Image (cartoon, rainbow, N blue to C red; front, side):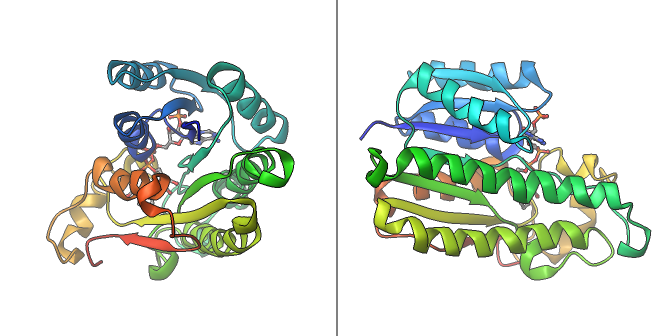
Length: 248
Ligand code: NAP
């Protein structure tokens, strides 16, 4: 089986770490980004330094035509796709639901849920054995927020990650006969830019006391279970969500 993976939101944070670990594990990597071209190019350089091929692809995962193009460009550059990591995601700005602008919530759900659904659909079309594909592995980014609910911060974000858990299970059952495994990783409190983008750069520090291991995690610590789920070592794992929150 070829080892070609598309990582959405591969320019920064957990997605960037997933690109690096995928390259370590022998995958050629399509690094998708939204706005941070230079960051995506730096990640691609790290993939190449690990001896693997890389392509950098701009594209907003909310847009159907764009998603179709991302998969076309991935296969043109690297060959048939057998891996997908859906890491592109946002929280929206922290507030109580009663103060949240509809547009902020809609944007979060569009990127986190529609973006993941569109990418999953296109991946399954191309990986499905009944359509000439080789099968493959899809890893979605859930969050511990799906179970914690994120009160007073972003309940719409938590809801979007609950949707990830549901679609991961449903698609695993639907696509299993096509040779496709579908799983998710639910990170806890991870040191990336997402907290500052939510409007609270001190969020990680504020919440660290609630983490049983007593510290936030690194992007790499979230990417390790992603890399494992992508790999053949997880060949009998599908439809599961791995909690990666250090007990939180
Ligand atoms: P991050 O550091 O803020 O990075 C977000 C990434 O998503 C960037 O590469 C960004 O690309 C990309 N992105 C955003 N909107 C996009 C769009 N419309 N189309 C394509 N790409 C887009 O976030 P992170 O912390 O690594 O989070 C990655 C995933 O893990 C998210 O799904 C998040 O919900 C989940 N997660 C994170 C944590 C945490 O504590 N950090 C915890 C649980 C779950 P550009 O920068 O190029 O625009």
